[in-house]
Length: 69
Image 1 (cartoon, one colour):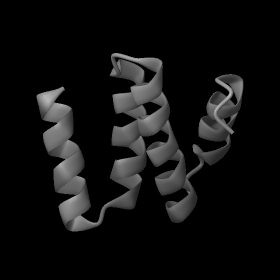
Image 2: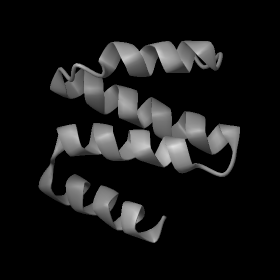
Image 3: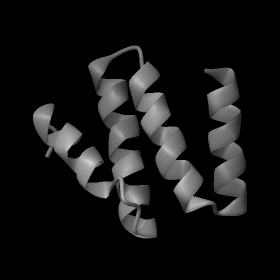
Image 4: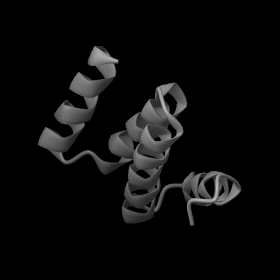
């Protein structure tokens, strides 16, 4: 997870929203708890929305399946 954390910080530093959507989605996939997964997945969805990502609907559907929206 340390590499993923570093990648997320680097993407924030450069303002790379598309990378952030992808990286937060990966973080959700590897999170230790459902709460952490939801936190990361919400961030992934927000960045997907902000960048017009094709992943927006998929991320929203996943949040809905997990009762988070």
